[in-house]
Image 1 (cartoon, rainbow over the protein chains, first blue to last red):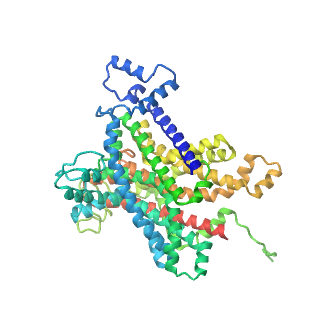
Image 2: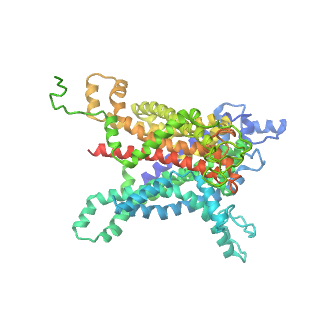
Image 3: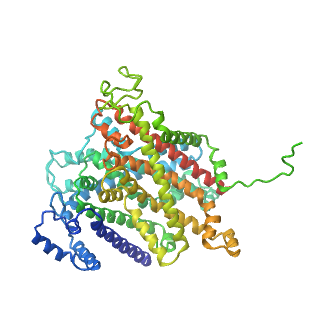
Length: 342
Length: 297
């Protein structure tokens, strides 16, 4: 386990290094002056610019510039937003938790429905149930998410009026911004209308989370189905059958556990995909998350924000990857030994 | 007297032909394949087939519902949008933008990925390890985010988003080529031609490529469905195809404001995207199934 941890740590450091390198080089690639791109000070006077140039060491060679950038990052300084002139790290801190909340709820919904349905399909392999599930899942991951979101708003928010269509929480509730994750904030607050606020927040997150969850859920269906079929084909299931265990016992005690392990390994790979879907959905549902913020930054030509957002969002995804890798390794002793490097 | 067959000859179809034999076994896949061909024909010949051009305004017929509606007009089969442009013509023109360009995008990134992947399969040690990690990093960045970054560098526009999508798709082709080539290089027939004195590049070109082509094609169909969705999503966000273009995602965006009075301007482009992606996915699924069957046989 120690070697496994070291390897992951190594990979993590390498990845973060590459990501910082990428975001550092972006400041040169974006149109406009590099110093302004990296710091976001669009209204700086010539005197301030000289101070900035000193800070970012733009007159020295490229390595010193890079190290100056890294030391800024270590101080939590991602520059200021070109559009709002606020510090980017505070902006990200206020937008990222909403995205984390949304993606985690969506991931949870996707796993909750996708994995059992995939198991059912595998158990009924080559029967009508299997075919129906497969066809539905095929349509599920072919639907463009922005279209699905619009249809969901039209049906559930406007025609039926069941769920709110935009935002994170009704404006009636005053909830203090502590962690940024709405549910935790509500539970922490001492508002007398805590439970109403909680219900309202759940109603707000339900629709966008379901829209995001659909495509990953169908992928989980397929992953779970393949994993379950592999497990059911294996020798130890045959041995269990030979011992005379009933089908139910085999499924519940042997097959599900072993199949779950394989599914969990692939959850991490799906996460980047899920965040992509979430970014589009945030725009449609006016969710105050980092995806919407980034897309708005493009229209405002806010290069510093894009640079910071890329760095933070990709590191977040990579951290989730690694966490899931650890969960997988904890569940499956075989994984700790055999994987090399990559 | 003609004697065309004297001996009972055993035929060995090429890997690609074998794939095709297995591929056409499943009826559903063939339906998907016909839809794929249909879309390809539309993409190529839409300017000749459409009743109107994609920007022609009919100011007397603004927001006309589809022909089956009571208020519809049969000369505008799928209705018109807010500027009186014929939806059917726009959708058909959109085929060449959304579907046709996704095909081009996949071909280009397949080509680039193939070159990088086979080069990296031939190298080993620190260079290949670095490349692997580098690809992992790129793969961990969400495709939309990468596209946003590239659009921020190059500026919005259809051709710029196409470059973005090409770059987004390259890593998966590098990955699959690399794995497939390393796998093939371990096999005996490669060893045989190596003993004959063939150079690595010769082996790659004459022996390995024909055998990994099927895997690449199956990956390419999957990449194409992703590319269609990406082009449409970027068009929808206003980063891709700009306003008069009949790209499906951009059409959808144009229709949002009219969603309640003219829902067909949103339904139809969405259905078109869904249709194209399902057709592509069916072909991809069929390809993967055929690959599995020929591996087991």
